[in-house]
Length: 249
Length: 149
Image: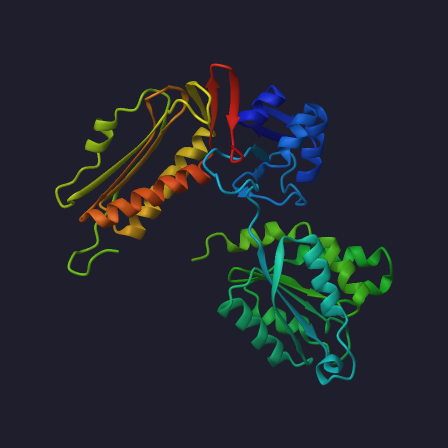
């Protein structure tokens, strides 16, 4: 059960300042609250800023501690006079790196990078600020990842390709070289999602983790593999990025 | 904004959310300092009429522990940004009568220009981002004032 805090007009319409509501995502808790508290509350809720514990969140996010989170429903404040929009979670700065000898040489068109970008646009509050294609060369991949992490201080880098068992597949090694901390849970979740469709997902060696304030996630090279993997973790990425960013200079 | 011939001041930062009438003179005195010659005080008071309605009082509600932290953070940031000697942001909650101060901002600087600018920036930030809401208690009813008003 999530502790839900209500303020001002939201508190009045709900008839309580604090209540417990179940749900795995922010959206589920809000939908339940709207059912409980009625149409007028639902209309107000759409204009509210939502905070979970210390962070302003996107409605699609998972509650990281569904049993112990505090979710605050915050109506617009009186002095925000020029805009009626609720405050939203920060827009993530994302880069997409396609790793493929053949796409790099122009032998075929990169379809996976654009598919990943489309999913980012749909599922995250994010803007893709960099995209690039590199060959399956470890040094090149390391160079791009380091540059984007250190120089541009991106929130998230999604690579695609080079995660299999072919001799030229070196994306996981290059990624591990730049990561300061691995997040094996992210890659396990992606592989688990792939295994529901095909046992061959077990052959993907994708890794994920953090360098500085940037989260790096390897996706497989096929359009289907990449989008399935990303879909499996997309709801936890905003929180991962917020955590990686916290404590950054 | 700190002038080059002055060493950077270590600012005094005062912030709070109070449920009793604000002692404006006392608050200002708490942040005066001899090495600063500009003290800008902004008081936001309860006004009537508002948009043609007679206002009896305002009822302020805050997410109190968060609002106190926010006001402190805003004041500290403005103090650093403008090289202030002191910054103060104190807000009332509960019922505030017409003519009473609902919010007090003080910016104290070596010279007046930084103090004026800083006070203006600080009140804007407090009003736009502080988790504090107000309900207008009118002769003809009550209404929460949000950004649409």
